[in-house]
Image (cartoon, rainbow over all chains, first blue to last red):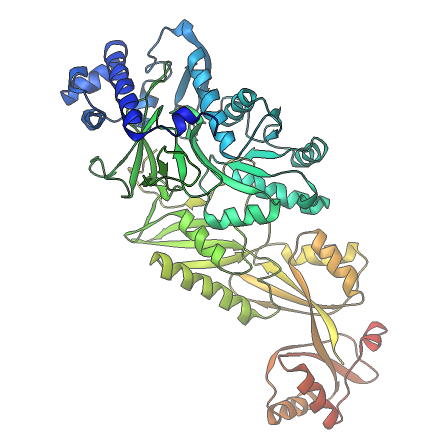
Length: 436
Length: 143
């Protein structure tokens, strides 16, 4: 544990700390950020109304759209000269979201990333192979700062050039791998082609995040890369990576709730839900200085797990992401998350987690085609066998999701590989009013 | 005696079959017989070649999913009723044929037909019983 004081604090003491920090945050935002003052005024709430942590429910939410509208500096809560670093989201669907960091924010980020790396038992003896992209994207530098705080040997290799990644991994005996889960599988493929055996490498643990991935993909990664794969969670709007992470128990992600306060809400009504109930994750940055965020709606679906973890940390856990409120496909009235399709595929012997979902609308009816890559194990010289494989997968998808799909077997490597986030869904429907 | 066949998975899209033949041609492999079975989405190409190992290696380098299976090559009199006679035998002996296709070259005066069944040993026994010639790998190679 990197920071046992804050990671294994008593509940009462922690609540008290969160409360103090929330009260100070609300006062600051109300007086310094016109955007938040306006929102609070609209809701008829003032800083005086916030006395306990549960009063947070009185405060307005912040959405990605809000953050875009005030681009670039509308959420700044400090003098611009205090800012030492800027990060943004990719902005592929509009103006990017901006995170502005003061010196203290960078220190906070280093701290939570040191805690994250320490979840994988990273110490100064480790060599951290950082395959997250460097630049405006938060992944690369987040891991960088955390590893530096721990004093580990950090290899800032960034993404891409997979053959070189493997060479460096061999030569510098990397022990901790950080990259997106889909990129780790691409590494495994290239390693196979190059005749590199992961058993002979020194990798021990991998911290994977920045895109949704399921238990099936975890087994695949652990099996192919011969390491323990941990799920880490973060977002540019909050700080980048370092919001929550799995420990070696691999049973839920510990949220660093002394600094990032979590709530689960009903995405339709905005009502706060009790622990254990599934809903949208909302986070408030309790101590950020540059661009603090009040009740940010992450659009990620999960639930909170208040039971104490075997690792000794007392901070709350959230279940691995169950989906997104915006990635959620609604097919003939049924909610479908791409991660559920992945789970189904992983249950079928011989399939690999390379798939793509194509959604189409014929007349008024939506249909989904799930493209699955052919593998040596699935293949047969007889049409009837391959047709029955397709039918089996269709039946499994139906029994899990209650949605009819058409499964199409495609040639290996025909689904585009990604060095960053994998694109799982191609939605060919032209539906108006779709979010972002 | 069973002979080796290569089966290759092909997506139903332009140029895939041509790609297979190009790969084999570059590897110096000669195609002796082939059959293509297809559905709306995909096809399975089955090939008898002069060098199975070489062909398989060349296809795998190009990321094709391919596997080697065993099939039976049978000599059939090259005259009306030749195939029908053999199929009658299989029917009487209750042998189910998954698929079949014909060879391009002849052996002496006989045509050669490839059979795939789930009961290869039974088929071999039946062919022996009815004195129908089976073609060996060596004969095929030298055609």
